Length: 363
Image 1 (cartoon, one colour):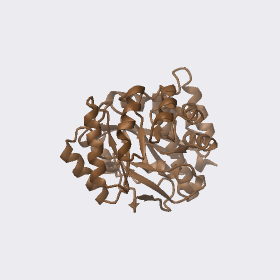
Image 2 (cartoon, rainbow, N blue to C red):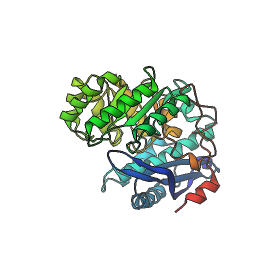
Image 3 (cartoon, one colour):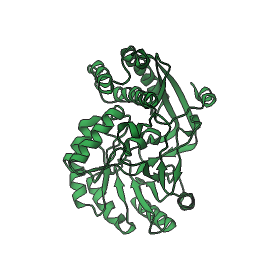
Image 4 (cartoon, rainbow, N blue to C red):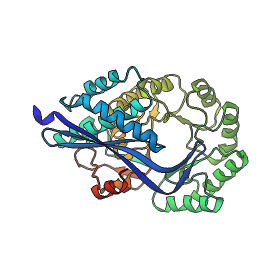
């Protein structure tokens, strides 16, 4: 059926500026450099997806790889999710399926899922098999390390006043006393009932993680996120057993096998698969179900425009990260009410691009 046959895969490099650079313990983030993908079928259906990296040169390389892999799916049936992923994965076997290869596969895979929903006349979460039509959301767009104490407190209060019932702040300063003081200040600012997540962005070692977890215990953290280098799975297993609050990690891990290993080894209470590092929605769902099989919850990293649909289809998924980095290129924003993303009946992922903005940010 030619209406489902992929006829074109086009990629654009965008550089979306931020109002001010974001500062984490890992690196500063001056802009969101993005590879935007459009897949089209012979029937005229379009689907959109994107991946990103911090650094325009890296995204330029990503664009070239997407263009290369895109040629392999032209002429194929857009509905054949696993076959398309397998084709792209096999083509990247020599260079490795992690890193840029996973990011490239993800952008194409997500675009194809968008089309599947559109041709079926269903939102993706319904197409997959909905568990619910709302997903809890936490504010992740503020509380960065560059905020002084007054800014930090004011921003925390503003997030709660805007309707968020959970917020995430960053830690990982060289001065651990300063980290503790900042967490204490945010907890006071948001009150005892708002959930507080703390992300250390891999800044600590095992000893520091355990020590800091004990020092942060009085502030009732919902989770402590990625405190150590993500590859140190043995350390995560030890730290999780000794920490007084739940552990969250997984956003930096690639593909199904790494997420499955975290869950099977009980390295975290909440595993955070990243849509683009999983290689797309097809593999994200596999990772989520692998975690479900061993009783571990998942929480999506970024990409709320797409990941909320996946979370809504998984009983063990909760707490979508709210990060509006791509709002400047969208004509339709993600709707939030009462601390939740409300998914609507728009077919596909419901993503609508602002073509004028895309031209503005195109590199």
